[in-house]
Length: 121
Figure 1 (cartoon, rainbow, N blue to C red):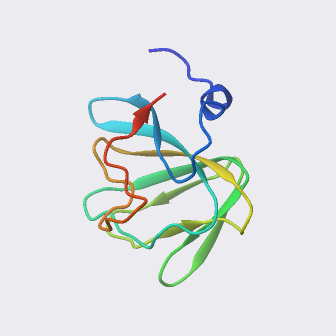
Figure 2 (cartoon, helix red, strand yellow; figure 1 turned 90 degrees about the vertical axis):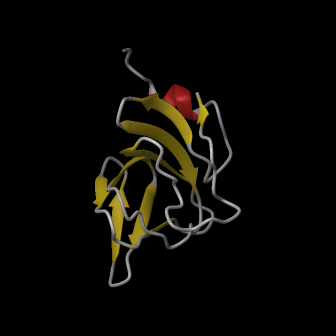
């Protein structure tokens, strides 16, 4: 168990919408991702998902509303709630995500952004 420097880890990759695992326990996984533009509306039927905005800002779209999440803020998406993270066009945002180990980051959707195995950095 060591402290993890998020800035150092974020400097190791540039690919967007690709989770990079930084910590994994018996029940949780923690990853960093660089995002830009719109993801995909999806749901995690079995788990909650926590997003922490490390740098920038994002919007979390839900079916009935949109929530702005600024740098230094956290949003918890409860299980079973459809959601879609997005940023303004051309704006890259860095996020840390905490969710149950083995969770697919695209939830119930399988598409070109689905990553089966997260790279550990």
